[in-house]
Image (cartoon, rainbow, N blue to C red):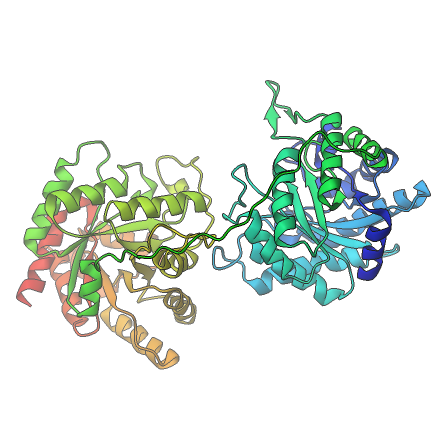
Length: 625
């Protein structure tokens, strides 16, 4: 089938009926919820064929291949990525043979779901890698061995506009004339997981080279009727495809998942979808052949739905006549005027009392620190919120803080809420980092996933929040003015990789860099020179990590067990032979600072074992140097 033939069929038939859920039916027949449903095309093809047959007998005009998650990333998670071609080919073969045996004209759509990974800048997968992954799967769906390929493609359950755009590009590169249906999914608040409204999604999808747009999964028919009306208002020129869930899922006491919406309820909404102008309607999670049969009867029986169509009004939000711009932070002014920055890493207390933290911060201020870094769950250990610690120090000690902001363990919703919270507390200097993995801390079973990598978070803060927009492009009440630092190493094992990564962070908007502890000033100078010669650009302001060694055991541990830290043998010998190891560690730290003089804009002291007094001794060299 080509694109023209699909449009002609829609004009002839009106509203076509798609099938219902595949996963729900497989689960009801004994497949575990965490099983790889796509692999059942190889392990139990008869079961997959039986479900296809049930939907065709119920009256479906279109069925989808059992290939929703059969891409390299999702299959890799279950150790079956080497079977990608076999699984997708089997999915087409099974469905095609069921259609042929039915003696009815039924369209076969290739089901292509999201990759299950985040695309850059929110994640680590590039557009090129994502397009290659989509192309790998789609190529098999279009041309499996031995049988005809699919008639059209359904890109479904997408929550990232960029990801669906990449999937369309992959499909169009392989087949300029294959019909494509592009469907997004929405949460209970009528937004995608990345925050896009149905109006924004429809406007975006309408600019892609697709034949139908729509919605699947999400909630039940009531929500999707409302969202479909909005999408139709925004893009009336494109046919709509809608496949709702059978309501929001519930879990029984026995652990079974069930959906509340009945077949008769779906039938009534099917008439409403048809009245709205939806050209392809089906079911998603929780729907069964009984739902599809009821929907078939509704389409074949003329009449109006008892469900009133939504009245949709799209309006543009008026621009605010005034924009509030906050004064720059002291750190922003220090960076601009090349003021030497002296900051010390502090760990929030493991408890509710801030008294020791505040007292130590006061001592460091008196020793010459003009900023204080507040670590967020260092070493993945449970401590007071870094937000609270930063707020208390700024209020009680009167020194500006730099809040460590790890991406690990936070989804995009939490990240953006935390950014707004920090800003409202006047904590506006951030150090963006990945953060320590939960497995090394005192709660190794804690959630450790993340929605965004540091480079993507820097870009989100500098290019969107500071422009008055959230991640989805929606307006904030005012722009923020965060100052954002990135992490880097001046003694990397792979200088070329570190240079490439640093350039991405600078392009994303990083204002400065906090480095890992430096113990070899000559190697640090060499890396800075290499960066400037290779890129033709000056280095961004460096606030160099300086860690006073505590004793010989501390030096050996850092050198041998902490990734990215290398301590030259002469320094380790000095610590071994020192009669007063703490004084020797302070002396070494002071020497390193002096040897980097002229190359750096500040020092970032990282005291071992909470010995802030040693950091204060190192600062003495800055005051007298």
